[in-house]
Amino acid sequence: MAQRLRLLAIETSCDETAAALVTQSFKVESSIVASQARAHSAFGGVVPELAARMHLERIAQVCAMAMEPVAGDWTALDGVAVTRGPGLIGCLAVGASYAQLLAAGWGLPVVGVNHMTGHVLAASIEDPELEPPFVSLVVSGGHTDLIHYRTHTTVELLGATRDDAVGEAFDKVARMLGLPYPGGPEIDRLAELGDPNRFKLPRPVLPDFAFSFSGLKTAVLYLIRDLGELDQETRADLAAAFRLAAVETLCIQLEAAVEHTGCRRVVIAGGVASNRLLRETARRRLQGLAEVTIPEPRYCTDNAAMIGAAGLVRVSTHGFDAAPVDIDPGLRQYA
Image (cartoon, rainbow, N blue to C red):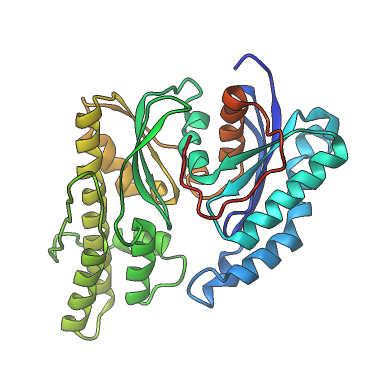
């Protein structure tokens, strides 16, 4: 990137109110995340209206905290990056509106960013020298995608889930086991205490690099039904067996995509990329085939630093947005 930039990045696509300062070479000067998990846990999932209201309550303070490294000096910024989609419409609207009000007040340009591209390019925080081409496995509560990142402007979707995203499957299995929301970290903790080989679960491998986790989820449901009342050891063994089956399914398809594309670089991104077993298994299976980059866990889950990283790349390839940022809750295009 020829131009040196410092961006304030804002992320409000779901239930995390986040802001960050990101500069050239993907240096993160600040990253503030206000989680809403406790507020939504009573409902077993995110309540969109509650999430949007909490963003409204928190966004000014979160942005002010993110600006502390420059002592709140807005003239130290070169622009504002904000998530424009995909996500919950009310939540996206809060972030995009606030970003553009700030930018208008201080005479700054704005760039709208794809949330999922942010997850992928969080890998640039881990490795500032990362450049396409690479294969990326994007795994979150709403997405399970395999993409071929040919260039920063040409991205091919190789395959995606046909039903549940893997993060959604983690949440649903956690609910079956009586674990609180969000379920992914709870499954991970419980699985550490269990025997992953006690129960045999399917590894659904579909053609065209596609995924399906509904059958795996149903297999766990039937096991729980047949076992009756579960003691803590059995719950841990079920969690461990499910986690292993889900991770191996992801890695089988990822390995096939690497062989298909011939890429020697792999990025694993999204909230589920913070899963310890996935990180270890992917590196082991791809050893000798591809170099694997995975952001540190705090940049895998929703955050604004990843939006800043994607904003830097977006500005270098497309420039800032000439028109107001138009949110798109169903946005799919990565590039």
